[in-house]
Length: 252
Image (cartoon, rainbow, N blue to C red; front, side, top):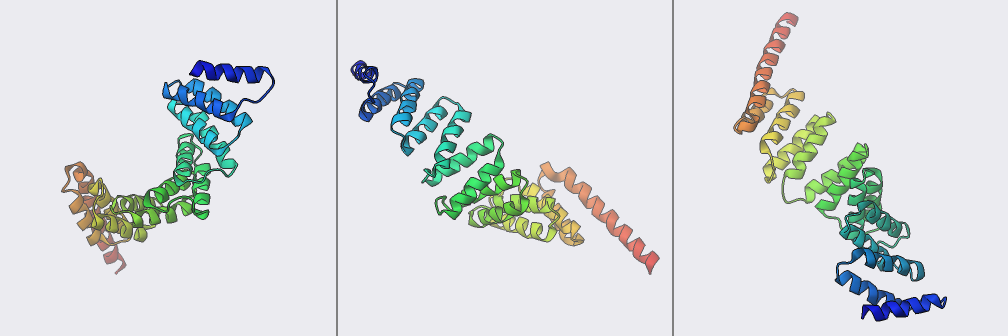
């Protein structure tokens, strides 16, 4: 029983000895089983002092998660990471996500980059997306783009291409933006196709391809959520064409 284990632990500690690891583990297991996470954590902290092991760091991090203590959850996971003890993709992804939540995206991006380099982090769409988001939030857009491109190419749906297209549009990379947005729309599964078509129209407009821009905005306006914005753009294209014609006449 728990009281017997605690008695044995207390007796050993009182005698200046280190109690057996299995006693602590039994006590920890019982506390955890009873949802007494704070007590289980106390035991884990002692285990980390006497018997430091990777699993105990991870379990402590997990228990802080159960207690909704994200800063300590991150601290424990970070300590494990700094000792090069994180060997699973999910642990590094979890660390990166916690860094993002703690608003330190640079550390998230670095952890993901190292995870990829060390062949620990699984090279799937979701993980590349996480890395791309982290680099972008860290204001490292040039490092973000390749990650987002790989994420999009590995995804079955077009949503990531649509997002990538918007990032490229913001960077005034209009040709690349149009290509990405088209890929996304062609692939399907874009959450807001109307928004993607608006962005596509803008990219084409910026490239001076008014007819392609007009087509994109006409497609976008089929969705009533985008209609008024698309109509404004269609008007603007017409006025811009008129202005350019008049300018050409004057020059002519």
